[in-house]
Image (cartoon, helix red, strand yellow):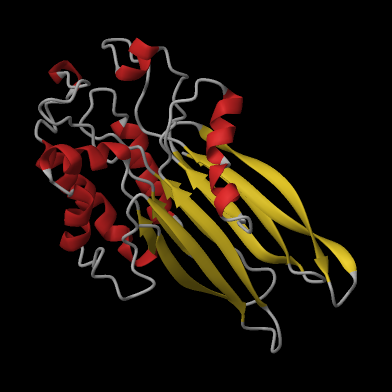
Length: 288
């Protein structure tokens, strides 16, 4: 089920912006989990006093069900030696950010537990945090999101009596597949545009890559009878699992997959940057 989330955003003027953070593929519980980088990322987001929104992208924990072919006890950290303690820790990490959280996605590692043991840890985290989960969601701003979410930010400028409103359409998707090349990764990231053609931002985890690709689309303004730009940003949201640590072989190193992009992603979005046509401006930054 694709979760539809409608979130209002209020800005005072065209000069104002807000920050959108995407953080996921944490893989807490694995020996190669970069806890120091993760804690620094949370501190940076916490200290951000600007208006901010957060999307949690899934794959919070690495713990494999008993008969999973990837299971290897050598990869599991003693600090998070059981799956419940790891997910409990993730719950505690998310809790201070609930006011700013737009979506909590499920990743493939999280879904594996439901398929093998019928344990839905992401739904459990949401319940613990007081968030209703499917099929009990009635609040369209509720952040429980399953594997993918269509997020519409309804942005309003209070300094403009008429107009001064725009939608920013986002698909946040945990992702899938295992492309080895950069081109293959971009092809996977662009899949949502084949389904939802009017997207401004596509965010995907899973591949543990980092970066933003800008694309320009065109439309026609009937009133002004001119061609206008439609901005689109493709976002790889990073990870917190080091693929090639010195002291242990990981799934990534055994398969010789591409190196991991450590950290999260921040988008600073100025929706009304150019007053003449309400053109959007986006700056992206790796965190930390």
